[in-house]
Structures are given as C-alpha cells and as structure tokens.
Length: 171
Image 1 (spheres, helix red, strand yellow):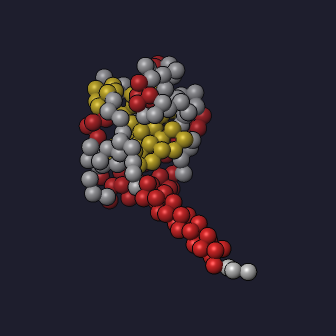
Image 2 (spheres, rainbow, N blue to C red):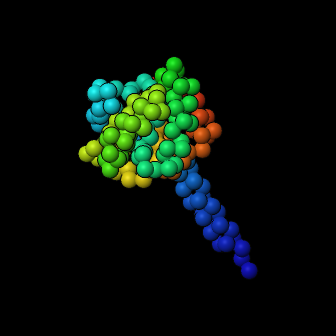
Image 3 (cartoon, rainbow, N blue to C red):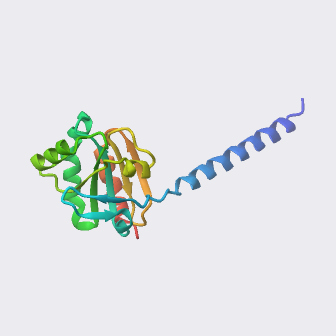
C-alpha cells in the first residue's frame, strides 16, 4: 500500500489546521471600539464615553434587584479605590427597569465611590451591545476599545490582573 497520498493528506489537513489556529490567535488581538454614548451621573454631571481616552474604565451594568450585582458592589468599590490614582475609572450603569429612587438610595447608603448612571431609556445598554443580563462588566482600554466583557459575576482576582495589564499598556 502506498502511504504517500495518506501522508500528503495528513500534511494538508495539518497545514489548514495551523492556518486556522494562527488566524484565531491573530483575531484575538482585535477589539471592538467602545460606543460613543452620553450619560448623566446621579449628581447631574453629563459625560460621554469619548472622554475616556487615555483611561482604563470598568463599566458595570447592574440592577438593585440583582442579588449578584448587590453582592459584587463592595468588590467593585475596592477595585475602584485601588486603581483610581493610576488612570482607572468605574461607571455603574443601572438598567432601565431599575427604579431611580432605589438606585439613588442604594448608592447613598453604601457610599459608592464611583459614578453611577441611570439608563432610563436603555440607550447606554443598547450602545454596549444590547446588554440585557446583569451583572455585565466591560473593561475599556486606554485606546477606547472593549478589552473584556464578562456576563455574570467576575473572577475578581483575574479582573484585577487584567486591569493591571491594561494600566501598564501604552495608550
């Protein structure tokens, strides 16, 4: 039996598999740009995501009725406090179904150290890929690209390490 055609076939399949693997790894480096959306914080200050350039920003979509969201808030506050002096910011976006009075009460009683926006129209969630599940956390790099998207409660040790990497990276 002539093994040459079999070996050629195996080599061809291997070459294709390697090419696909290389393409997949190269594709991992591509990131989607964060959307340009305007938002208003609880204190009435208006901002735009366009102002984030040069910073690493954590965006957390949450609701006061979401037990996982409530449970992770102290960890988000700790991340914010730990990194804010190094060009890091946090924006917590409450979902449009969350009563504004509940959001204000939650933020005030817990003295959250970061900005909170009420997405009463759903435009912020829509801009970030139609976020519907809470908690959803995104990390935006210094160039304004989405570096990480987590649906559900994050692994905070891994999130901390990713923030460190993004802060160390050039803008």
